[in-house]
Length: 177
Image (tube, rainbow, N blue to C red; front, side):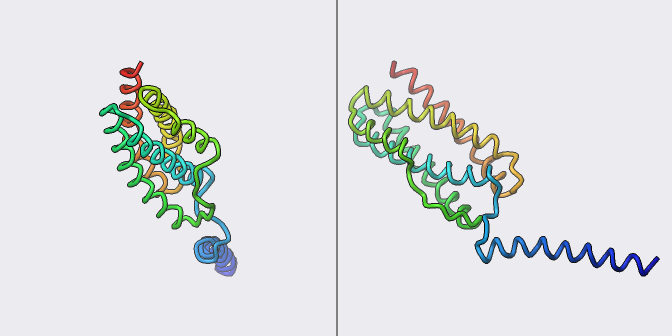
C-alpha cells in the first residue's frame, strides 16, 4: 500500500506546484492578468468612470454658479481622485495593461456639458452624476462578491461612498427642477 500512496502523493504535489507556477508566470512574466472578468471590469470601468466624473466636476467648478453644485463637484474630485489612485495601484498589481482613457461616449457627454451654462449646465451635470453613480453602484455591488479578495474588499469599502454620492446627486436633482 505504501508503494501506491507515494506516487499519488507525488502527483498531487506536482499539480500543486504547476498551479503555483501559473500565478508565478502571470505575476512576473505578464502572460495574463491576475483578476477575473468582473474584477477587471471593476478596475477599468471604475477608473474610466472616475476620470469622467473628475473631468465633469472640473467643468462644474467653472460653469456652475450654484454653491451646492460647486460643493458637490469638489467632493467628487476629492473622493474620485482618492479612489482612482487605489484603482491604479490595483491595475498595476493585477497586471492589467490596457490604456486608461475616457471613452468616446463620455467624451461626447463632456463636450456637450462644456457648452452649457447656468441652470442648464447644473441639470445636465447632476443628471450625469446620477446616471454614473447608479451604474457604478451596480458594478460595485456585483464586485462585492468577487473571488479576488483585494477586489472584493475595495468594492465593499467603496460602495457606501458611491451610494452616498448617488443620494446627494438625487437630492440636488430634485432641487434643480
